[in-house]
Image 1 (cartoon, rainbow, N blue to C red):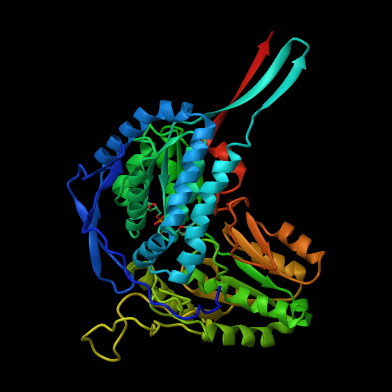
Image 2: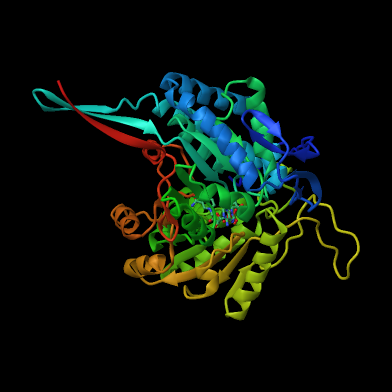
Length: 511
Ligand code: NAD
């Protein structure tokens, strides 16, 4: 939402531990590697704790714990597993503000988002899977008068789950809840950029003593050192990965060594398509369109479904573009702990540099900057001392930016993962569909129209796993989410996801 909170509040930073290890077999343990890395907050770029830099030995240790727990957890009655998931939801909800602050400090995302979206969605996700697992009774069919076909579900056993940094707790919840609901034990590898909020979360779960030891294990560290041995292990029955398409390809290669099944939630370059008839709509709807067009800046653009391409029909392009630019100029970039901040800090210095580099790429290939295009002067953020020229903010802040150009440009084709979108025009519906699909990716899309036939036809023609029509960036637990094309395969959310976490056994029984 871009509505302001009143009165404005600056939230406190939580008190963090100086050092975080791993969580394995129900215990907080130091890494066997003996190594740690420094973890900083993108709010100011300062280190605030160190975190285990785990290796293959740590992964083995977590897999030992998970394997020890798997038979008992797999046989735990569904009602009990459901109770545990509901309890996790309750604990998360009771500590929602604290966890929101942890996520905000570690990732740089605005507190208004973590409070109103990320954490409530984590809670709801656990409740959803606690519920659907109860309503999943299996099936039985009579084959002939003496023979019956039963279908029963069995957990896979131990799974490996690799998490990205853009929604640290939510992306973890998307994976953990269905895995546990289906009766699996898991080894989770968080992203090295955002390792902390999940450790604060698991401390709360551990204190409540509701989860048997070894069911959920968390191993911190870098992709090639901790993620790779997890994906490569013959002791995981499935690898669930969310991250970049290039990393996904590697993870699939590792998993293929043991024919381990994988699900892949990868990158995107989602089109957000505005048809001319939105201009004739009432003010309320038109305002919703403008807000939808500005959604590319949500979560600093670090969203796999970021509407990073705006497609607007030629006949309305001039006026519509002007109104969107006006809207984007008013977005407030600032201290993520300030409740008024709409766009916070990019999650890491690497990400910050990558986005700045795309500003050069866009300009060099002739894209016009309609708004933004540079580092932001963020409100309420400390200023770095020294240096020449204008004093700059500490931390990693970028102005919401719109490029104008054509769909073959790199800024239209490559995932920037910043508050940056690229705008182009189309002639008619067929043209809109063609441009929308002219991408390697197929994760999300937005379609804005008042024509009910168009509102069905166009989404059906766009090659993407999720199409929002007259809305954007809604993520209810009951709506299946996942990619077409190079955006991956498998689905998250929705009860169909349970099938990614279990085997189906058929028994034909003759009585
Ligand atoms: P990333 O690929 O750099 O890292 C993701 C995870 O993979 C991290 O935990 C990382 O440590 C690990 N990793 C890195 N190299 C590895 C290796 N060689 N072996 C095993 N693990 C390895 O991605 P990111 O930068 O953290 O996240 C941003 C990306 O994630 C974007 O491309 C975004 O579109 C995508 N994403 C997709 C979805 C979705 O549901 N489709 C959701 C969120 C983010």
